[in-house]
Amino acid sequence: MGRTKTNSGGGGSSQSPLTSDNSTSTAAAETRIKDLLKELYELIHQIQDERAQGEHNLTNISKTHERMQQEQKSKNEITPYYKNKLKGLYKTAMQDAELEAELLRKALDKITEVKGIRENRRLDSDRPKPIMRRGVLMSMLQQNAQTLPLWVSKPGERPPPLCGAMPADSNYVAKPGDKVAARVKSDEEENWILAEVVNFNQSSNKYDVDDIDADEGKERHTLSKRRIVPLPIWKANPETDPDALFMKDTLVLALYPQTTCFYRALIHEPPKKPQDDYSVLFEDTSYPDGYSPPLLVAQRYVICCKEDKKK
Image (cartoon, rainbow, N blue to C red; front, side):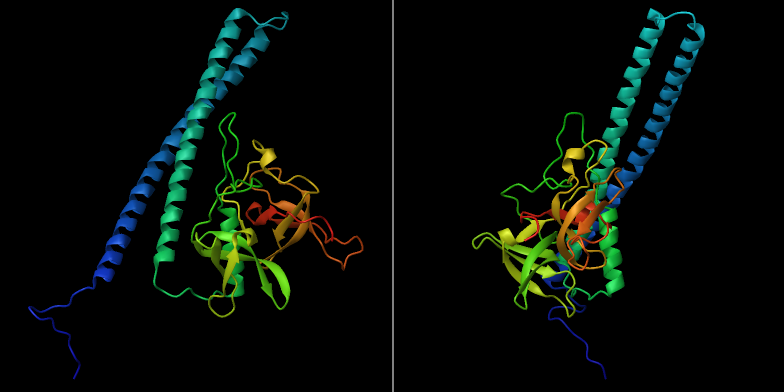
């Protein structure tokens, strides 16, 4: 016969306060995500409408230029009529572009907030961290790099810290769940590995981090702040913020393809378009010139190397 759990003072089961709090927190997170997705849906429609309006104005600019050229073949100067007309059209086109850019920024903020809520729920979960197969882990790292938000600067605005090659502020502290490069010691050798922050102890000024590629569950390291380098949290746009990228021949640490370790490399070619990766040359003594052939590495996994070139 099966046993049943009874409560003094009435039938039915009761939830512990901790379970109840977790359920409330999960429900609140789900509600917030639904609200954010609804707002994102509305923003996408606004962006589409604004883009259609902008394209209409650009067509008017093009047609005005064509008419002006046809009517003024024998004249060397633009008439006041066309000057004023084009000035008004260009002003409207710039306003349309600025409004579309602002709507895109708002949409990106919503996406970032949804990702943040989901990441917090993962960190708060009591379930043990699953051990991933190698192929699954590599796919996840590639997806994380591809979905890294692109920083879109406003005119005259400088990219923020941790955008592309921009370093973190000196007082920056990585949050639990953030991915970092960590310098760890194993078998009398030091390596830079990809790790996830567990917490930061203010009194000791040290991080607890988990190796992202531990074979048997979590492999935890306690490391000083100087042994941790935060990864970029935005991609830099080569078309608007080329100064936020590592230039050719810069010494960097880059994640070697299909591994979770960072190695010294030289920038062979920086990205030319927002979706492009770096082309890098890894230090490798098995090649005559000491460097590997060019390999592609995403912005997410290329960080500053403070060491000198070739030891």
